[in-house]
Image 1 (cartoon, helix red, strand yellow):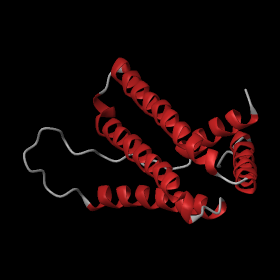
Image 2: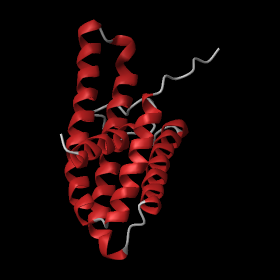
Image 3: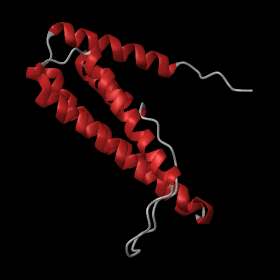
Amino acid sequence: MTTQTSTLSCLATLLIMTVPLVAAPAPAAAQPAPPAPPATAVSTQSQIQAATEQRISGLQTQLAITAAQMPQWNAFAQVMRDNAQSTDTLFRQRAAGVQSMNAVANMQSYAQISRAYADGAEKLAASLGTLYGILSDPQKQAADTLFQQQAANAAKPQAKAR
C-alpha cells in the first residue's frame, strides 16, 4: 500500500469515527404527521450537527483550503455531513428498539451500523482522493502529519474511568 493510499484510508476512517454519535429515540415510522420531536432529540441532533460542522471547520483551517479548492472541499465536507446523519439515524433507530430486540435482531442492527460506517468510509475516501489530488505539497504534508498524529492518538489505549 502506498503512503498516499495509507494516509487516505486512515483519514477516511478517522473522519467517520471522529463525529460523536449520541443514541436517542427515533421517530416512529409510518405515523401520520408526527408531533415535534422532544427537545432532547432536537438537542442531540443539533449537537451532532454542531460537532460535525466544528470538525469540518477545523480541518478546513488546518489544511489551509484555498478559494480555488472550495468545490472539492465542499464535496468532501458534504460526505462528512451525510455520513454523520446516516450513522446518527441508525443509532437512534437502534436505541429506540434495543429493549425489544432479540439476539439476532441486535446483531443485525449492529451489522447495519457497521455497513454504514464501511460505506461511509468508501465514499469519504473517494471524495478525499479528489481533494488530496489538488492539494499543494505543503497541504498534503499537513494532512499527512495531522492524520498520522490522530491515528497514533486513537491507537493508544484509553485510560479506564474509575
